[in-house]
Image (cartoon, rainbow over all chains, first blue to last red; front, side):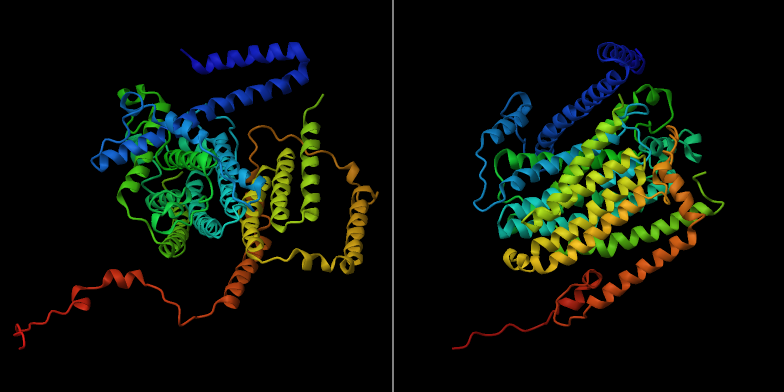
Length: 367
Length: 202
């Protein structure tokens, strides 16, 4: 069954129907609005589901790593646990501290979640399936994710608490620092793909010396840009405030930016964090691991649809996130800063110059 | 009926309200956040003009970096609102003068017949495959490569100067050198002393 063909047919029928109701120009405008809203829902609803079940996966995976069973009481195999968590959070009382800036206090988690969702507009799921196929997709993602820090700063300030404010300053400084290294790593990717469009970045990885031999996975960006993959992924972990960079939830020094938050307001912060995790996993897959491409060019592998490859790779990256949390001890704050500024940024600058010079030599593999 | 003017006026209204609130908000942090909204809306209007690269860079640089640092500073300052409003009347004539000058300049550019702003044709629709970023990069690195590099060098000088001005080699601050910590050998830290067992006195 040709899904894309069916989609085009539905679009054509819908457009004709709306134009029949409202006239050609207004009808087209209204139809675009409705179509985009529906498509956004089609991305956001599964994403929120994925966020909910990622929390369950995290508890299960860490449980097994620590020789426990993990949540298994709610529903079969504990599968309804995220729903129970959600219901609990919704019914918890939201306490707004006295002297807090009420509007900004409520707005802060909303900013975090909105930014985490907005970045998904340009993420491609297969060669043709993307909400907005814009030329400057990578730039858009960098711009939107750089706004995530507002949620944190505003939360810390609006809480009217010294601890929350200190935590916000720390978290914001951490995010701003790692954004630079992350940006430089992505500049390397766009240098070799010669495009800011995420779909083009994936298709650019499908050709090369090894891809001609049928060994696609050796042509992906992870091999020539291996140091950048490391920098990008570790910066991604730091950006999403996950372990071992999760200062905000450190037991020994509870000065996280969300100490004053309770109930669903805190839940929204968590949802933003997990949505960002999934986003980083998608971007790592798209930039470095060939997106929806099969690892080996064989009939068996090519028979599996592209989005399954994409989701499979994303799942592996997500498990890596959880594995990190079960493995590494938490970084101290000065160590976090040192890693970002003194290790990653020089490394990315050197590698950027190296790649640019390599591309000018006859040995360039990106022709 | 075209939908573009509606979107334009919507964004313009948001931009004007946000800009107005920047100067009327009593709380400096609120003012800074309104400024963020103003920047973001301005970027949306640039997007309407098909300047996608500039619009996204405006968000990336001003919203994502400059305003964050700005907020840092504004939040950490102990701002006394009464003291802040003290000089209002004395600064009012100067502020009004600058404001009037800006309005006059803008009227001259937009309304004067010598600039001919109203005769400028709309930029032609370049089509779907047109990459704003690529065109801008081509211009910057070919036709305007020297001014561009000059600007880059000036910025570098500014960075170095700013760091040189604030860098103080503090002797009393404690810091670790991880390379030395890792390179440490057992012999550097542990000294085994062979010592005969002692008898308890009395």
